[in-house]
Length: 312
Length: 312
Image (cartoon, rainbow over all chains, first blue to last red; front, side):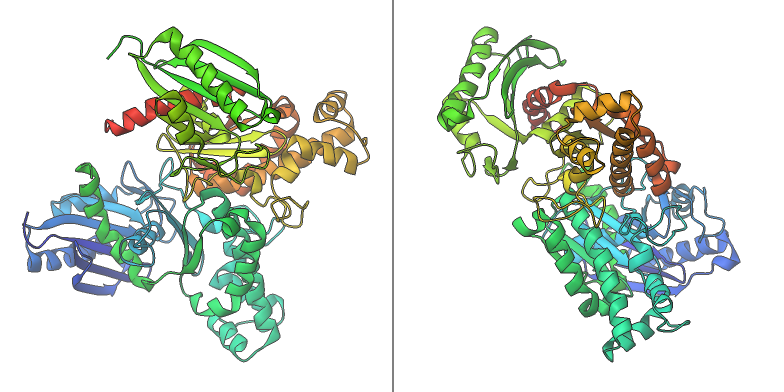
């Protein structure tokens, strides 16, 4: 084994493409980032990814190189390495991305859903480094989820496990694009905060940040919005805690600065609704890696695969 | 290795104590059952268990004997082999049952929660024999749950995972002994069916079987009770499907004969509330081993442990 063992993690976001060479101890050796040019077509995006990887690999060599992990905003058919049901990524739906990139880069590539990658990143180098089991909820435009069980991503049957934004939090609640009503992400995402601000007549075109600023000023309607968000999150988290009895549940994403406004209600709701929470040591906390979590998780994938195939 | 490889499974129920010698292929070689005499004290129960085990072991010998698995109606602190928070089993709360029985029987003993054991039994020899991942809901006086992930019981932090009867199904619903309101078991267990029958003025002292008989006769109030039960089950199952994306979800227990009355509503609710259900192959079915599931699961535990420690 070379002295320098490293992987390259890629985080393919809707607006940014980031890549980093990370060593076994979790040190970022170098990173690169740029805009994601989805409007230029699939091939341009794949070339950008290959370019970023090659640039990093040229610098750190191939002797200690363990492989490439890529976090992607969409469902992934894990067996086939294909992105499925992705409306955001034009031209990628059904595309065999893993094999295409493996060929372009002449090296094995591991794909992972972005929220799963973020959960794995938090387990490796973030708030979950001392546990093997955790659940991460990413509160952004929507709500994503990642479940780490026994140190590995829980994938389910075809890789669609962890759709935590679509847990029913409020049975008669807001209609969701998924066909359900009352999905968690319709009551606790940034988009939900904006919709609720409109609903309570706080303002028609406020961003989640605007609502946060109003809450900072003590505006009762803004505080009510975060109160509702906390109630929905608490109900969903209590259900997750009753199901998993994991030691750690993490929240991340753009709405996290509002923690002080929604967390007290959320924690009270969990306390009320989960016997398991009251009787076992269970932490519900902000994640710590911010938007780097997915990059760490993607980079960890080749190390994890190597570790597992070595039987460790 | 002996030609006859077998284990002994014990199912310690609130009213019955059953034990069976089962071979590696899942054939029941012999079984024994009797009343569980909790009123005679802990030592009497432990002696009954030891007696049943010794009787079976005397018959099949020790050369091919793989060990003992015991399904217990309570939480189990898996690391310590101790039953915790069990109000039904007088004298067992906090008792180091695993080590006590290991000593009495001079052989390793594995404890497992009864619903977890039933889920494992269904995976080994029942409706789940062709999958590695499943969720089982046991609909009885209460509702228990067992989660099998990667062929093993998902235990969580201290062994309390799978408390599926306490998923919030109806947020403003019936109060539960656990401190929550609207727990699944308050809306979909045999006890809930009886309570709902009273609530809709069907009758004050009807059993779940009585309500079933009335539904058979087309009684609209009895049908309404099972409709409500199906709605609550469907909501909880949709959440489980969105979380796990497992291929199989099983229902068992005393209320199962009412399947035809609650299942259509339940399946429609799942269809509506789960994108994952609509887009991946997901089976929601009755379990097939009935009240033998726990016995099979308990007997499978020593085989599974041996298999895992052999690295298979």
